[in-house]
Length: 306
Image (cartoon, rainbow, N blue to C red; front, side, top):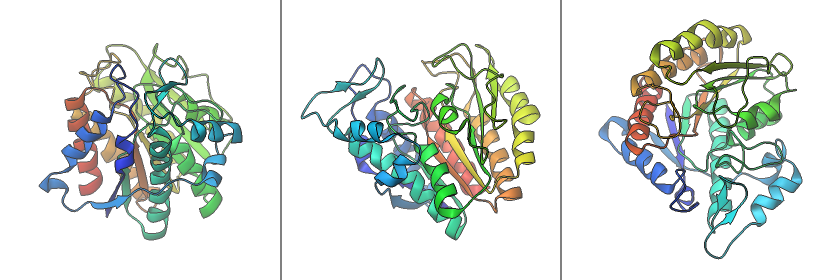
């Protein structure tokens, strides 16, 4: 079974026409999934995350700040890239809540889930919104799996073109979470070196500008997937960013939708081998609308059919 979590509130986060992280991204994703191929998806309305769930990974000051910024119109700028509109706080609560609900569902009933939500999350640190991200959705999910379900081995695979600095920051001292990332370097946020290892639970595999399918698959097959298998995760979480696509405007890697199908197949096999098939994926980046739509369709198609 594949569950799709989303909410119309995620379309109401509008950082303005100059921002690549726009409501059009989610509309493109949902339109791509509105196809006979995906008729079997179990479509579920994302709930709000609770303060308790958010506070497992964020400081009280950060949570209160995000929830208190409610402009009547226009936007409020949190940093150079991260803005909030009147609907942003609700969207952020639904985005984080989607991943929590997905974790509860797959751990209690089995199966897999994809969270078609925004704003994205993997740049948000414990105390800072950044890189279009307000709350760290995938980190909230991992912490919930540990706190509420007693898991001792949760893996987070991040194939967004930008390093998930927030996720790494939150879990750098948490040995129950293994965080692995492939990403372009140099590139925002200028983190993700191979020598950033946390307590042995952080594995970074940088790619160079111009790298494509061969280099991407070689890193995952030769470095990242073996570490994940050795960890024997009880749950596989995925920060699913699609901005390493060759047509994405914000980076310089050269992946195609077939590469996202390939990595999804491998992550499903990992989940089947060690986690009773339990996998939750959450949307991160991807800023060329056509490339995003085709890549998400490839990703969700493999989650559905594998």
